[in-house]
Length: 348
Ligand code: NAD
Ligand code: DAU
Image 1: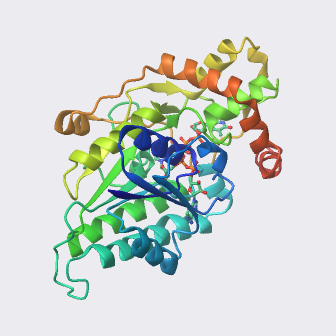
Image 2: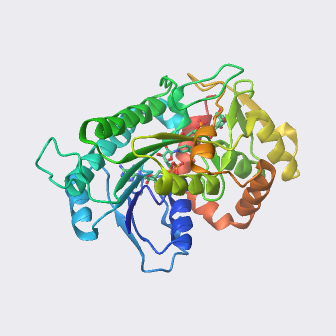
């Protein structure tokens, strides 16, 4: 089996590649543009010849055609994206290009290579075993009030340019299933944490700032709620959907761990033996969603997936990982990250 993973040098994609290579004897081709978020250090321990890296853009149709021709791709798992909400507020256009046009370009090329009769617009028959899996997010549903959880049938009400671009991609993927009969699944996961996460995101940013005794910038009142899942549980859920997901279906993924941001920050401070005086409440993120929570009963009851990590165990391991991987951190925060950080947090 030949799997094309896009965005595999980022946080979740790199964890997923290692997870799959250790569990199966599949060949994995990783296509990644290596934007600021892509980091080949995330994959430097891979030794097998079942893994191939290709630097390139998911919007580049001729490159995608070459990849499909050379590797006889059976599965596409699309992680490639611009993924950070704050950056989408500063500069939305690249989010639309990568997240929407990139996804549609991938779908188009996969359809051409997988359809039994590529030139027959009415043909809905595909090579056996092929599938396009779109890695989406719970943010497409918008925000919740104090009660209730996201279910797959809810209308999409995205609030940031990032989540609007992901919602658009979901609709395009769905349309390729409805119109062309393409075998697809969409997964919508909640907030991930774990090793190799880029330190623009809440948990690694707070760990790294804490280690350096820098201010901990908490947006607004810090009472926003996210539903946290360890990245390896997200990987096992995608693996489950790949093997058991019904074509055309959407699956929510979540770990049942709703926590206020401020309590995560306090937990990190305590684990690192620092003072809460480091906390700095700053201007809120525009359009900041107050609460996310995933109802994961479809994937647990229909596909038999269960998350393994408790939040306590996952956070202990994650904090230890950052403590033991200071080279990885220094490599990242010495480059463009400094400019990003100054620009993001100097006026708040
Ligand atoms: P990330 O930002 O760490 O990684 C994204 C990767 O995509 C990077 O390696 C980057 O170089 C690559 N990329 C960007 N533009 C590209 C392009 N045009 N062509 C090829 N590669 C390109 O993101 P992540 O946190 O690992 O998220 C991966 C996916 O999972 C995204 O689609 C995101 O929307 C989704 N997701 C993330 C979370 C989360 O909590 N991080 C939760 C649910 C869903
Ligand atoms: O829900 C899934 C989504 O989770 C993914 O689709 C996104 O790719 C991923 O980035 C993440 O989005 P969030 O905006 O929820 O994650 P982030 O880590 O940026 O922020 C988490 C919460 O912490 C959010 O309420 C904003 C807050 N925050 C974040 C940062 C970076 C702060 O208070 N201070 C900060 O400095």
